[in-house]
Structures are given as C-alpha cells and as structure tokens.
Image (cartoon, rainbow, N blue to C red; front, side, top):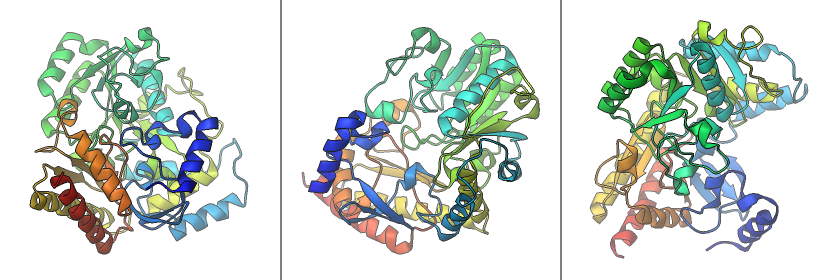
Length: 436
C-alpha cells in the first residue's frame, strides 16, 4: 500500500519536476506503483517519509560502500564545510585525492576531477578523439556511460527500463542528432568474434572503445576473460584508446577496480560513485601522453566550476581511506555472495526459475535459468516476475533496484542478520510467485 504522504509528495512533484523525479529510473515506471520518498539513512538501513524501515540494496547506486552516514565521513565533511563549500580555485585536497587514486589505480598516471560520471565519460571520449585525431567510437549493447549525446546508442540503465532499444548508430533518446550517433558503433558484449571482425574492417578509424569491464547497467553481466584480453590486444594493435568505465565498478569490485581484478590495463579510466562517498564527484585519467592533450597544456578543452569541490572531495577521501582496511573487499565480496547464494537456494526450493551472481560488492538477480552474458540474454528474463518480486520485497522492507535492468549493491554495513532477513523475505516472495 502506498502511504498518503508518498502519494501526495509524488503528485506535487509531478507538477514541478518532469515525471516527478530528477532521474528517470526513480519513477517506478518499470515496476509500477509510487516511488518511495526517503528522509534518512544509517548503515545498511533507510527510512521513508512515513518512518518505514528498509534494508537498502541500492546504496545510492553504489557510492555508499561503507553504508549510510558513516560517522568518519560525516565528520570529515562537516569539518571541511565550515571552511566554505566551494572556491572555484585549486585546493590541496585535489592533489591528495589524485595521489590516492594514482596509488590505488596505477594506470591513472594523471587524473582530472569532474562532478559526475557523465562528465567523466564524455570528457574521456573527447580527449581520446583529440589524441588520435579520429572520430568513430565503439561501445557495447546495454552498456550505459552517462547521458551525453554520443553515448545514447544501444544504451543501458534507464533507457532499457523505458524500452528504448534502438539499432546501432541510431539514438536511444530524442534530442540526439542522428549525425552525432552515426559516429558511435555498437557490438554485442562478450562477443569476441564480432570484435575481431569490426577491428579488421575499421580498427584504424576508431578513436576509442568504451566499456563497462563488469556491466552494471543492464543488470550485472560478467565479462569473459578472452573478450577483455582480445579487446586490449586489438586496441593496442590499432592505436585505439581503451577506456574502462569504472564509474560503478571502481573500488567496488576490487580495491583497484575491475582492471586490477582482471589484470587488464586500460589507457583511460573513468571513476565516480565511491570517490565521492555519496557526494557528486567523477574523475577520468590514464596515460600521461593522452592526458597531456587536455587544456591548459593541450588543445582538448574541458572545464567545470565545481570540479574538485572541497566538500565532495573530502567525502571521497574519507571513503577511499576507510576501504583500504585489511580484508575490506574480501569481506564485502563474501557477504554479497552469501546473499545471492541464499536467494538462489530460496528460489530453487520454491520452484521458481531464478539465477543470481555477484562480483565484489555488486550483484545481479535474474528471473531466468542462467545468468546472462549479453544484452540479448538479459532481455529474455521474466520481467513480470521481477516486478512482482520487487513489490513483495519492498512491502517486506527490502529495497531493491526498481528495474530488472540494474545491478544491486551491498555495503560493508550489511550484517549477517540483514542477509538472513532478506533471504527470509525472499522465501515468502518466491512462494507467493510459485502459487500464482
């Protein structure tokens, strides 16, 4: 049941905010019903405007890796905020976080801070084009790299939720000129043979390839090692810049990101989410010879008044320092695996077709026989069953992503009791699905 408060807030919001939300997936259009309006988060829990408590498996789409309102992060933010919220000028904090990012992700020889993942990816592509002097870029079906024009082709995340599945070179969104999208090529994720064929035909025309090394934006899709290794080899051979979009995976699947987990070194990396600790920060960086193309030292222009904002950077620094604790990621991965293994067992006992998997602190739930490895396989899952499951879990106080096409996230604050409560709620939900 939707509370009067939630409904009133949503109805009023729709009068002033398109769709009543400031990011489309929040609207619950995919799963139906009224979005939950929240007012508080602490640790693994959230409370809505009516005071109902939830175990949170979205974690602000990744950045709350320590859980909500971690006391050390909050204190650091409060302390720096007292000195001013922004200068629009350099601070020592920017150097400090650049040094820390370089230490944890050594492929990022030079780093530039921005204010969002979208800014990071669009800027990385621009610098790759400037460096190579080429126009064409390659992305993969179902991967989402932010809402800049060139990347809204066969895009994942909210564009899948809203059914915008267009063909290669055709925009997935209105307002994107076809001539802009024409420079964007798409291939099936994990299809090594198609990758080889494309590079054989036009590898020397590609400025860059951008990829989620672990996909989180068409639900969780894990890469085949041969696919990533072949991609690295082909980019090197053809002088194409390889960009790992680690906005979601950076520091979430491994302390050094997916590139450390799979031991593959990209030319450029984009980061976001965790490096802001819940505040808006993004970054892109990589080989020094490529990054030197950026203004003020090079001819590729990129700027932002709030880039390196001291409050946001401080939240990121506090978060990055804490996640370096011994065994932090091993414990996070183990807790996440415990969750998905428990859900798989619960579904099997109820006789519901279901699969799940995890990488580090990210997980994917699918109402299909096996975990998908491509966009086409993701689209074959039972979306109707997911939607029913989502609402049954929400009613039980379990907050999952309101779309069958989004990964979930576990934080260090999630306890064994949280996992047990979640699995018990899922048992009831699966039983309900099986009986209808």
